[in-house]
Length: 251
Image 1 (cartoon, one colour):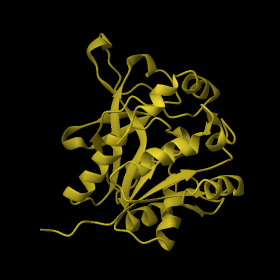
Image 2 (cartoon, rainbow, N blue to C red; image 1 turned 135 degrees about the vertical axis):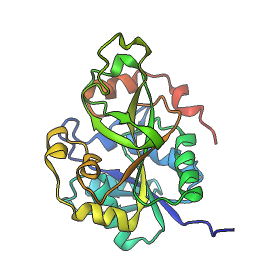
Image 3 (tube, rainbow, N blue to C red; image 1 turned 180 degrees about the vertical axis):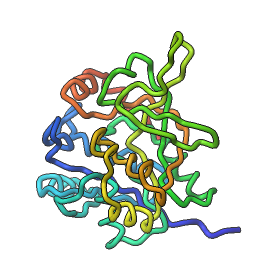
Image 4 (cartoon, rainbow, N blue to C red; image 1 turned 30 degrees about the horizontal axis):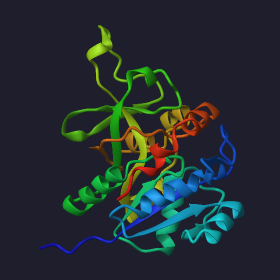
């Protein structure tokens, strides 16, 4: 029986978000967003995790609340580049990227990605995807995913994809979750690969894989009705949700 692969969950948390500055420390029901994410990761099957940040305020909060934390460079363009830096200091076979703006992420979704890593020969970028409410297909803050056969991700966009020329009531859309996985070698190769035109235009980090012939990307379907907080509207929507929505996931 193959040995279990070592896995480290990393929560990238950048303070200087262009659309919602300081969002990891914005409070939801009295607790900063990063606290909610960390507690969900701590309940998952992944035994070790760390917050990766570039800001002393986030680091101080984590230390005061006994959340593992590591300082990383302010020059990282996205979470994957931040995890590439973490992989140089903290060794593991694979890294699960749980974005710091998913305070309602389903613990079972994290566990499904973890199980996929343990059971499959993962060589590229693993992207968790979930069904998307059709009301959100025109929301540019929600990244949509077009999936072809064998769970291969064909494209990601802030526009509605795939375009449905006929009545789209039967079309199933998928969202790109802030939940990814890859090996340390893969994310370091990723960080050394220059951004292409598609990534620069859409501001979607996974498009670097689509544009590069050497970086593969696959989808893993999960059940998750959470929300990535990218804008003030997203934040207000999450804050309006009842506390029980956050507290009922007891794993």
